Length: 466
Image (cartoon, rainbow, N blue to C red; front, top):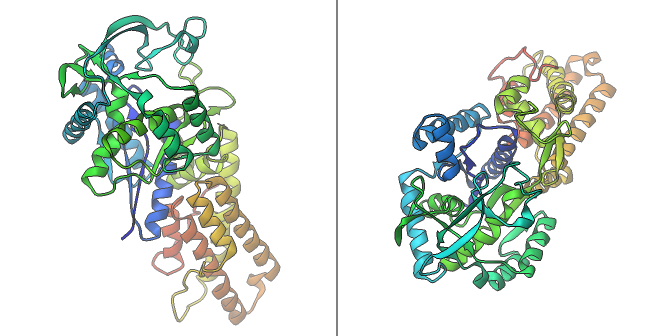
């Protein structure tokens, strides 16, 4: 059985799930379900990132221990993914015992192979707690971190360093030849451009920070949270025979970590590189950056309450091309839901199902074959290329064509035998649409297939209009 292993980023537990986390996770679930449908042993890994100064600080503000605080936020992510029918193989946490053990083994290998300086170096700089990293003056805007609008603290300590500069040439080679494939192509060019400018070695440890994974070669230091967090993919993959990953799906803000830093770490210990890192774009809400202050944060629960489970999954990925920056608004999502699902798929199924219930068929009607169907093959190729919104346009065109065919044939005016013959031609095409949409709309697809097989009767619309 062929294997397919996809990952989402593990989400930092400084915040509860929102539409940003949801967008990435639904996309990863869709592509994993697609390969599973093709009889692959397809697995999706997701989880939470729980160490670091920021978490310790957040826990303190809530008068809780870091682990207690992490447990509570981690549970909220699990609840969110359950509500969206995310079919993951494991929800990994960086506080899991096997991750701590494997992360320490990985760090020891890096040290033993000379990828980490044998002794810590003194570092002085401006440290942003929000980012959990040192920042250069060039990265600041008016002396503030542009993302958090906070002034970094002056900090000096001895840190261990990962020798990124020693692996620049190797990284350029594996990225330019797609041994480590970065997509979209614009992101690949961006990373190659940065490599050509030269990279500096990076700090990978903090001294005297209790909430973290201890370095195995120096217990007075803990691993920089981003370093050990990246190892989570290997923690699962190496223990379950699915490493290297087929796809790391990330936001473009963390592409550097998942290509340059993660790539260096894997090359240094002689492990396989992920086959592809795909970085999707940023998005705004009604043209504005998502913000608690503005009050425009959209949660997974908000989406499910408005559109249902499958409706929420669909509108996210139909809204704009995956990989590009885009804008979400309730008005735009409502239009997509009503046009594509309520008036589109839902209405088509309802029209034909009403006629279908008037007849008895000698045999179960099966999905139309998609073999050698150019439209179907194009759809599948687009899904594999992660062009979700473009693929869904093909489905919309198929639904529109069926509606036109029904309007022209006027089957409700036909005699019994003619109507039955019409249904024998049309129903398999509806079942094919349901098959194709299964990764996006798993519950709806199953409902449609059961309706037309006579297993269930339905009177409620699949997608009530909003």
